[in-house]
Length: 250
Image 1: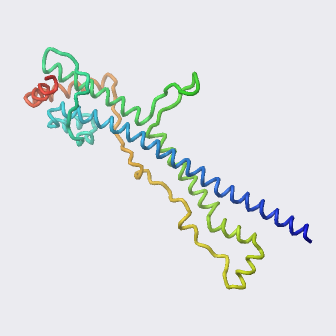
Image 2 (image 1 turned 120 degrees about the horizontal axis):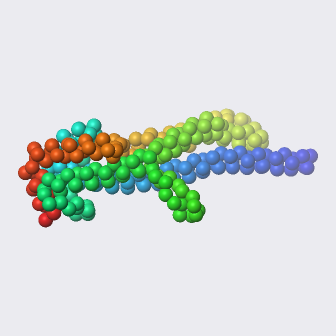
Image 3 (image 1 turned 90 degrees about the horizontal axis):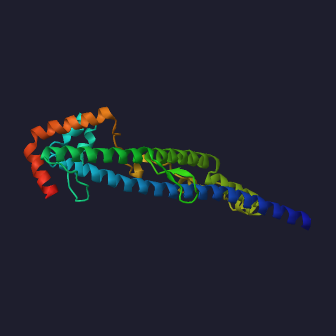
């Protein structure tokens, strides 16, 4: 009987160990994924600050924001007009003989920089892998982060459904036959309420604080439209724009 008891005890220990490794292993993997997702979100927030910095400077060139609404509405991107206008002397200034030429060059240059930054932010770009020679990897981008967050939510739903804390605890206690008998004699049933505290809550993409930007095209037709809008704005906001250019070019 002692051998049988020892066998049963060892079997119970192995079963409980396997159940614990499954339960805590899946949770640890999910926690690692959540930490990585947060790191990716922080990288996107850094990229977003760069994007908004360019919009800020472009809106400043547009007569300190006075023509920003008109410009961005003409490009079906009116949400960018709401970014406050400001200037930092960290922009490569195009050379031109006239104020008009300087203005058109600045608008075109900043617009193209912005379009590239938004494309990288939204879709990423392939760069050389720092660890594996000859391999390329996609940079952190809004689409991949959003997809990753959705896959984490799917994992959360699976873990909450198949590895519920209450069920795991009930299983563990059911293996302790002797302890279970004592609890029954004491009037304690195998009921638990760990789910509320230990189950994972699904993510809300909005809680990651990730901005969305309109995608800007730089094909020939789009750039012709940018130039046409800039020329029209210069003709009607000449004084405001000249004041800005005097400030920028010194």
